[in-house]
Image (cartoon, rainbow, N blue to C red; front, top):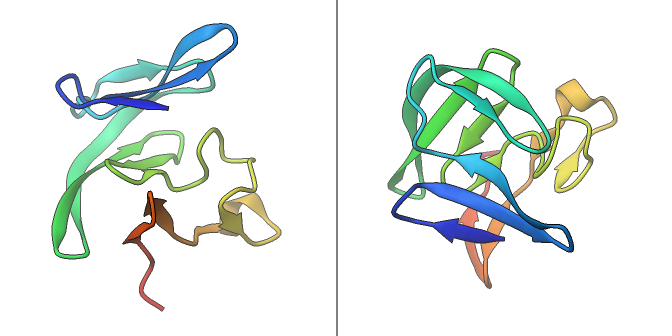
Length: 109
């Protein structure tokens, strides 16, 4: 993965090349199409995590992205089980996110 801070985009690299994973420059009404999903940004706001504001984008298809965290349903799609818990995809929750060895997100229990 690679984060381009200036463009607010995160890319995934595999043997076929670079693919857009997240675009945090989106505003309300913007349409996104990545290699794994597409949607319309329905609501763009911010959320406080560990005393820092992070941009949050809610899409019309139920997906939520948080800048610095990623997709709350998993790194690639709503059906991917990692790093989530729960049997039903619609009831899975993000457990935590680490950057190197530093915890940057853990939900309040």
